[in-house]
Image (cartoon, rainbow, N blue to C red; front, side, top):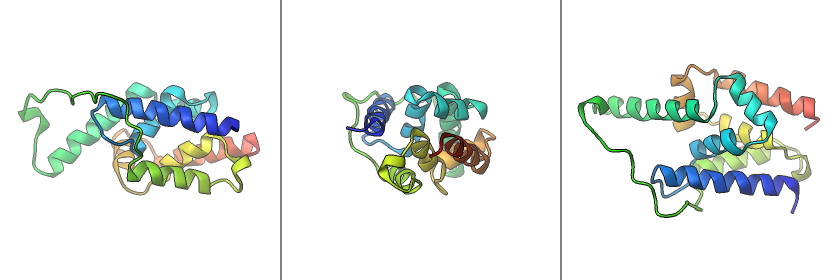
Length: 160
């Protein structure tokens, strides 16, 4: 297996653990983003931290997105004393639609498989136009397009 295959497997495995923590039955794009913040290689983590996005900051942004989405439906999270989601019994291994699309976008951003770099996976997550990740980044005050441009610059510097 190529190095990138090992990297992708490690990120998906960590994303499964992230999904497990929130009781999610599937791995979604936001789980991939959390996994990259934890298990990503140095370059991808540096791009994220340069935007103020470490694992905890991403988790906080996702919590704000959840609360914001509820309020859009007329539900105030503050009005209820809800427990944290129950942890799933085992890590998820099933990719949800947003994770599949993120992987597809990431793979499509490289000319050939041998050109794939860890940053391509992050780029696939960041290129989502709708969904949890874009809403969470917006609520965190992160310019998603600028962050994706930073990833592209890092790929150019890597020669990928």
